[in-house]
Amino acid sequence: MGKNLTEYEFVAKAIKTLRRPPYKGIHSVYSGFNQAFREYFNKDPVEATRRLAEEGKIATRPVKGGAILYISEDAPRTADARSVLKTILGGNEEPEEA
Image 1 (cartoon, rainbow, N blue to C red):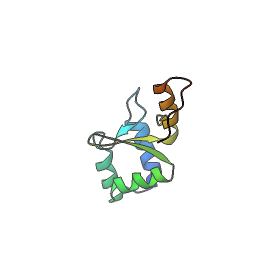
Image 2: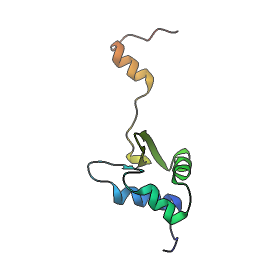
Image 3: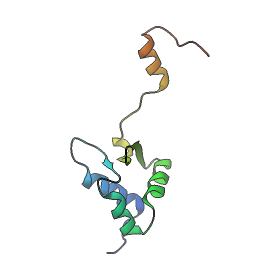
């Protein structure tokens, strides 16, 4: 098997081909991604995906048994703490300073 893909190309292709609608990400372990990455690159997939996430090329979310891998633009958006507090406390209340 020739190694023609970069790590990012491999991860992106894996996400696109292994995800099952309506899901936009893949589980790193249960999808078989980690083992396939090890066989293709002979490297640790956790280190590589962590680095790609730090570079903003992919997004990861920790889950039981591994992580969910997303192409950055497909990752679910997380709410910022201030907007969550505003929702919890009601529309006009400001959180108390500690």
